[in-house]
Length: 207
Image (spheres, rainbow, N blue to C red):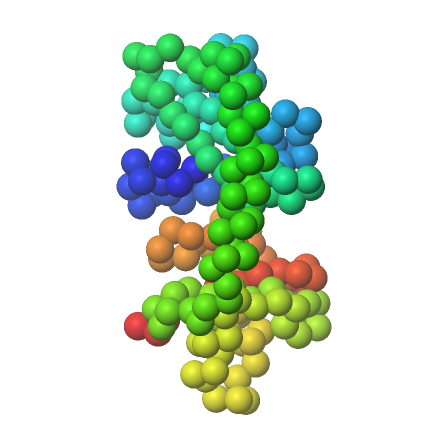
């Protein structure tokens, strides 16, 4: 998906992410994460009828894309990364050998990504990096990134994390997801007070 996001304008970025999280479609990353074979092409999933995919029909066709193949880099039951490779409409679709090759290299790539995290260590977040908070149903912080801790430290101690999420992600009319201005993670259109346990929110630099 990162490659698709580089191709797309702001509106398409939002539509790509919305498709991934909220629409029924084929070859979703979360499905590949649990699949026996962690790679699949759009051509393979639709039997060559790419228009059967909502993502292709509403987004990718306008970019001049043809087939694409997605792969998750999984080691054991843990996914350490993913990739989406695309071809133009004039290109041949990805072959079975292409897909099997990606499936074979998925685990070595996953081990490499895991090792890179271990070797990098836990460095302090940069001052402009966005942060992520995971809140429980009682608004307590279950998990937070270094960047989130950095930005929380800039706030008065009386400012609860849940208030930040409610301010950042105010309610929208039913059926509409609220998107961050930078096109990143979507949030539920429901009011923040109705969040399910483990809901996440983003903390970004002021301004």
